[in-house]
Length: 156
Image 1: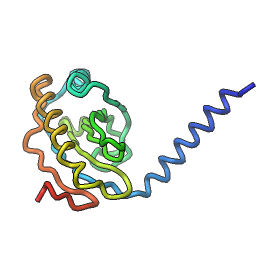
Image 2 (image 1 turned 30 degrees about the horizontal axis):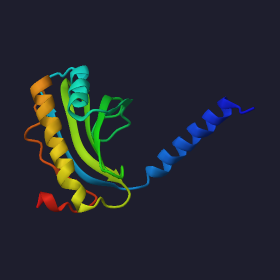
Image 3 (image 1 turned 135 degrees about the vertical axis):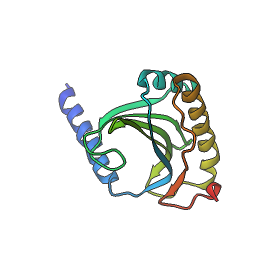
């Protein structure tokens, strides 16, 4: 007989170990961020992205620092990934000092993402921006993309 509790524990430990090791790998891709003076219905964003992209992944977490100050409650929507799963387009939203902080990105961890991954990812990011602007009144315009961890030819 298999001990399911022990298997779940081992799987959880494996997942935590992978995350810890992944923390040493550099972030690569494109990122944009801005603060907006409006609130947004996270349920609307969720439904809008699901309607536009089909299956999305959503994670709600408490930030440990970085773009979102430590302790910030953040909703992360991963709505597009490269065919090999190496790069993900995400929209992260969290309230910071009575503003909504938005991070919109297409990134991967480890090796540089191939240059041909960026045009379809940027197209998906534009589709996401259009959808949440129309459906949820969240304007992601004027968010300048910057390359992180690698050169990105389409930004030149």
